[in-house]
View 1 (cartoon, protein in one colour):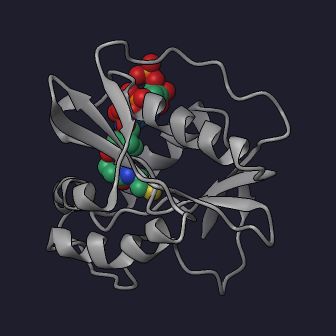
View 2 (cartoon, rainbow, N blue to C red):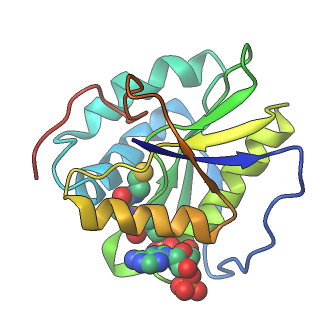
Amino acid sequence: MTKVIWDLKKPLPKKSISKKIVVKPISEEQLTEVGRILVITWGGFIKSPDVTVTRVGPYLTAGLEQPFIAYLDNKPIGAVSPRLDNESKAGILDGGVHVLPEHRRKHVGTTLLLTALKWLKDHNMKTAEVTPFNPEGEEAVQRATAFYLANGGKRSRASEHTKPRASTGKTRKA
Ligand SMILES: CC(C)(COP(=O)(O)OP(=O)(O)OC[C@H]1O[C@@H](n2cnc3c(N)ncnc32)[C@H](O)[C@@H]1OP(=O)(O)O)[C@@H](O)C(=O)NCCC(=O)NCCS
């Protein structure tokens, strides 16, 4: 399994961001909106928005994870949920970056990713990491990997025993 890592001791990648969207940190009440996005973008891996509420809610309440949503004309079109690991100082992009299909390749994902990396850096994380994963299949995983590498991430071989840091513990064949 390939991990992608950013060194947060270095300056964040300088990438062009979307000026059309607004990215906001969200509270527990809006976690369902993140879940609704994941139901679409994760090819059925998450079948109900409640999965995200149950999974991310406790981390959010504990101040360890901060989901962000990208809004276009007040409509949620993408999300990312960075999580702190205060022991290892290795922050995690929990489940990775997600953008609704009709809004891709307009740098919405880049804008979300940079927001998440900045949040982790501002919270004293030394690195950020994600394990590219998408149950739709290898092509979707490669697309996600290409996106992270285009945004300054570096490949690293994860331990064979490391599971994807996804927003649920389940896997499903596409
Ligand atoms: C991966 C994902 C978040 C990218 O979001 P996006 O808004 O389309 O990405 P951006 O427009 O910011 O892309 C930035 C750069 O990443 C690279 N990139 C993005 N999508 C790519 C693709 N499909 N193939 C190759 N490179 C890609 C390009 O270099 C792109 O820059 P360019 O468009 O100027 O050439 C989006 O495809 C997605 O939601 N996928 C489904 C969910 C998923 O698998 N998420 C990852 C879970 S770990």
